[in-house]
Amino acid sequence: MARHMNDVIISKLEEIERSHTVKILYAIEAGSRSQGVSTPNSDYDVRFIYMHEKDWYLSLDQKKDTIELQEDKLDISGWELAKALRLLRKSNISISEWLQSKIVYQEVPDFAQELLQLYKSSFNAKTAFYHHLQLAKKNWLAYDRKQKNPKIYYYTLKSILACNWIHQWNQMPPNDIQLLLEDADIPAELLIEVNLLIKEKMSRKNQELELNNLRKYIDAELVQLQSIGQGMSISISNEREITLALDSFFRKMLNLYDFKQ
Image 1 (cartoon, helix red, strand yellow):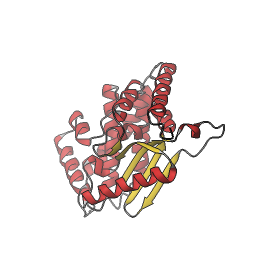
Image 2 (image 1 turned 90 degrees about the vertical axis):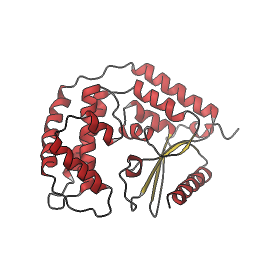
Image 3 (image 1 turned 180 degrees about the vertical axis):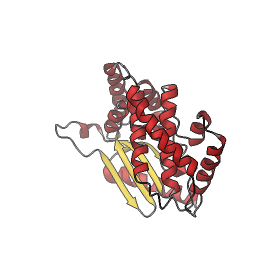
Image 4 (image 1 turned 45 degrees about the vertical axis):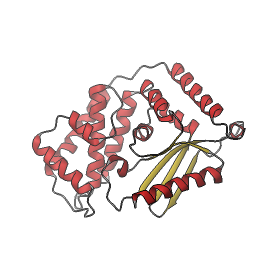
């Protein structure tokens, strides 16, 4: 089944290239499947970065810079290269997660490696910290105390652990929750609930869980992280240097993959 879906996804990406006249530079799995916590019923969340041929960029008017396709269990969404680079410059956490995906469907040579280095060199700790914190708050607000959905717990916890990683190391956090947990100072009784949560997240049952220790931990961490964020200094970086590096990468991609030549 997995092999079949991989072929289906590759076929859909090729279809997108033909129908939109674009070149897909990088395509990955971005959902729970890429994090090893999916269920057999999980959707396939495919994300990609693409570019147009050169003439498309020679226009005064701004054009649509996203491509989306939803079909059955497929959720496919792509960002145009310039859009992706502008978001990278703002330490967008989606870009970070895409570049760390363990499931790559399509990639031009060295694209992810080069882009990852650009992301690290332009990383703004405070901006990324607040991105993760706001995501944690948003997920936790959606949490229903009566229906204890393990998915909400999981993604809230992951964002909290990412915040703590950034605060501790001032670096881009890994997308693997196990690496985040290994770095975190979490009591043994809490780890028991976390492991139960991950196990339940990977099952089809979607049962309600009694995770009292984890709930208290999340409530306390959200308050503490808000205070930590307010005390973080703004990262000072050479924005002009970063922009020049991103411009250079953009032009390089246009010249290498000018598929209209």
